[in-house]
Length: 110
Length: 116
Image 1 (spheres, rainbow over the protein chains, first blue to last red):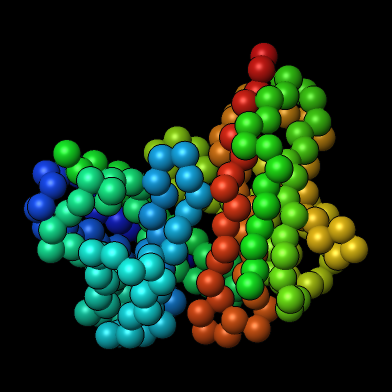
Image 2 (image 1 turned 60 degrees about the vertical axis):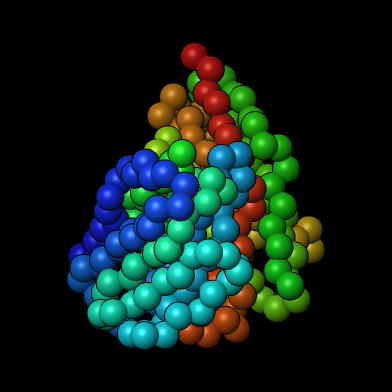
């Protein structure tokens, strides 16, 4: 069966520091992968998606970037965090038409 | 463009009562529709999905939803609420012709409280 992992589970970072969040999927090959952000009191916002290695599509202009160095690995990065980057970050993979989500990373920028 | 509207950001029911969470969608093409549940500090779990087969869809934990094209609705119901149903519920739409991307558009969520 397929499993999706995210780490770290929680992260507290100062403004201006870099960020790297990792997502890996097991049990499937060449999945579509997605990064979402959930800010307090708001719904889910799609940030990036990828249909293959090295293929990244950005949905929202911001100081975040994504990379897919391996088939089942998806990384979310930032060179300098802003206070507004705080939130719950969720990675997902697509199976046929539905998406399955990882456990999430809680990021607090101080 | 597709969109989803969830009516009622907070819904409170008594244990054993009917749960009804409302979702209306907008789509110019045949939609796929989904309900997800999120418990505090966890990821989203798929409850059920509609993919143009039967209009009444049964999901996990006793939930079901009915696709009504004429009303552009996909409301989520459960006959008898349990304390463990307390969570946030998200309705989502994806376009049938999305192909490789099949991006999901989410509603803003409904927080369900279950009173003893």
